[in-house]
Length: 220
Image 1 (spheres, helix red, strand yellow):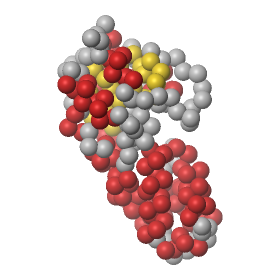
Image 2 (cartoon, helix red, strand yellow):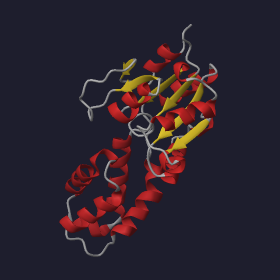
Image 3 (spheres, rainbow, N blue to C red):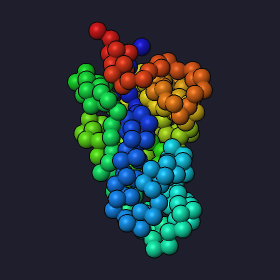
Image 4 (tube, helix red, strand yellow):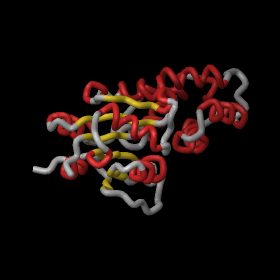
């Protein structure tokens, strides 16, 4: 069946979150001299470890960092606020993201974002990638009151786009929240391979570069 819509996860799928985080942390380190009692690379490495690919919220990360490195002159709340308002300035998309999305749009494919996370923060990061004008709908878990892997969030996206599950592809990197969950809701699924997840994943498409999606979705 022809694919009429593609739904995308954000972090690890469109947004190169690991590179974006490293860019932000390096910048934050430079802007706060209180961190400079710790070597930059040691600070960066520990931050990334505590972050656990974004699955630990930054209040806990900053509290732990300040405690471990005995930094008393800063509050975790100040640093969290800096992160919330500054991360968007470091958002990096994966290669070929824009060309893939514009090709889909030019071919009449409907596009939606379906992301877990805090509403305004995720939306700011999404906008920072410069791709929001290409999307028909944006669903973020905090704003929707639903969270992947709940099938209801996928079904809500289908309703908003006016398409069926059978004619929709979901693209994500998380084996459970994205791939297994979307397939359980009746959608086709494309898994973006990641070193974060080494498990075998049953998907309709397995890819490394976003440009590979074009040949699957658009059939000449």
